[in-house]
Length: 420
Image 1: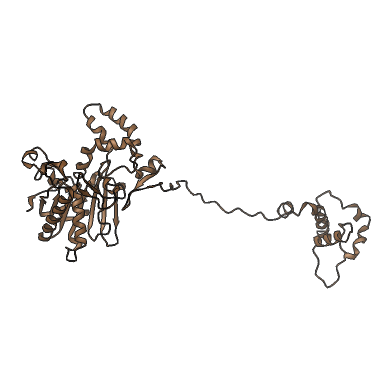
Image 2 (image 1 turned 30 degrees about the vertical axis):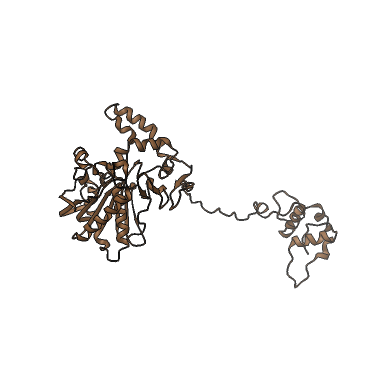
């Protein structure tokens, strides 16, 4: 039996509903609560009780309820072992009962269906999604959407649930819960809502940061259930991520921010707001260093825990991308040889420099600097000594530098006179 009631959507910003999944029927899976074991006692004072005011509002701002939409609560046990009361079903039992009831409700529903879960109800919704994916006679993927908040077993682009750090198949005896993962490749679309600093759905991946742990535990009441009451209008664009898996199903993740640390929220009304803001400005950067998603802001380069199907592994942060702008530089302009630069551009070895210079003078017709006189052996006609180097008619002119080198090998004194 499903408890049903009419319900209106509240808090959705104008125009936002067009992007939200539409629903003709909504089935809510509430989180674990001891009043499910004793509803006649605790249900009267707990707004999260089955049929209570808050239970009806779970994830209500993340779907669009069409005209005549019916919202129903799945009456599964909602307990996780004896910590929730004597003889209370364990978590695995509660989830199994919730899956059966939800699948029957989906089968009997008309039109488009939304399954909305919180905490233990989110893990139950995950199990329903896995079951439908494995059913060859399942409802078409276009007719069913899953919305989960405060999911302890889910890993998102922003966060890691505390349950994801346990190996798949590991059982926690006191809760009677066996660790499992949400379907990674599902034909059905999903919406995931995570409250920042929620110790169950947003567990710090550097858990040795004790201040972050204390913030998550002390602020549980301000982040866990409250995330299911949030609205997309409260989530900045950079905290929204849409991914598509190999089966074509999309997962839209919302990280609902908490500008003030949840651990400071109880001080509201006790201390002046200016004092709370000052303390928050000091503590928040320390807490943020416990989450690898903030490394680009905090500059933390310490390792963090990354979940796997087995035990988590310790990994180093990816190298930070360089933010230095790349300045395009023009290619260096090559200098053209001139009379004044040739020596600098084409410089011979030192031991032949003087001979090369003399040969150059001869080759250029004594093109010397102003005021420079020909060498003495040219003036006195001693150039006759190089007649043996005279160019034979019909042969190509030889490079003066080669003449100088050949003269040197022959043991002659190089000259700078003209070649006759």
